[in-house]
Image 1 (cartoon, helix red, strand yellow):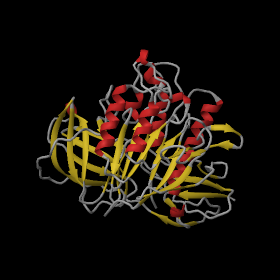
Image 2 (cartoon, rainbow, N blue to C red; image 1 turned 45 degrees about the vertical axis):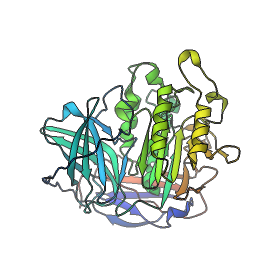
Image 3 (cartoon, helix red, strand yellow; image 1 turned 90 degrees about the vertical axis):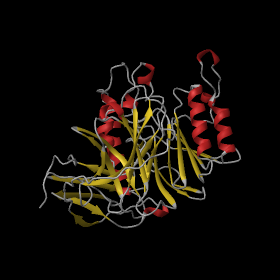
Image 4 (cartoon, one colour; image 1 turned 180 degrees about the vertical axis):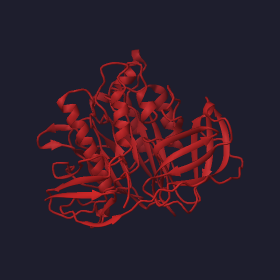
Length: 452
């Protein structure tokens, strides 16, 4: 079924079957229209208390992030609950006076929500840590993070997700990988860019709790100054209404091989971890099949610090159970990843490994491997009937994983916006195509330039 919907000066909402059972459906029905009101809230005065110094949740950067915020980022967001704390790491030189922190969204009743700053701390390496409290008056959802200091205003998009009263008992996940997004005038790269935008629309419609991306977000670059793919994909990522954790792939890494750290500038750290509630996610940068010893050492420390977190997920671009990661390159200072990963998975009772790179679906279960290991098919264009893949799954707090296999694609469920929906247009048309056998619930957002 193909449905075309015209929306004038509003935001469209589709509702229907709940996706908690991870079913991929067939029927889309528009049911209601909601309005978004934009208001500006004056920041409130706040109290300050001391804070204990903790290890930073990211390795040292090689270049400054685009917006002056080291953590949380668009590719490594923070997940918080009411009355919980949010730790923000910013470039110290940009903070000239007492900072204030707020969360902003175009998709909530109020545009801006002030946080109470509890403490600030110089943690070294030119980084200032700001600890703030999450109040109850903030709606659930994804927010931009803004830090103000004097005339300076730093904003990282899609950086904070508010769960509400408590962290979820289970996570509804969308696994995406290998988009090979490009801006050069090559037919396949331009097709991949369009598919990526449609995948974002599908992710927004399905509304999982989180998107997990395992690399090759962009296609390999040819020159050290080729920044455009990173800049362009960043602008498209901002359209996501779902938090997204992203790890590098070998094509993303081509910039680093040429001495340019565009990934750190636009997306997040080269490797890292994200922890909330009963869940922890570890991001391993496999480069082009090789890993520096300092990364192994850093990640081992983070895994040890999370040993009591029930659910551990490893995200890596290269399938670790392959020969590509099986060699020790002593002369170049690299280490084999396989023994380290195997030891981590066994020693710390990992629940899941998510990977990409192969552009096929592959499910490997214990005892062949220490933990359930999933490779999902590519989000890029591979064939006329093979493109735009994504895999819905549910991760339970006891470590069980339910997933759709084979991974669905845009060939069977697709959402396409025919106009920009970032506030620059007064109306938007959306084409929803569903060629599957069951119903689905979609929530399709659009920010328009005026409201009736």
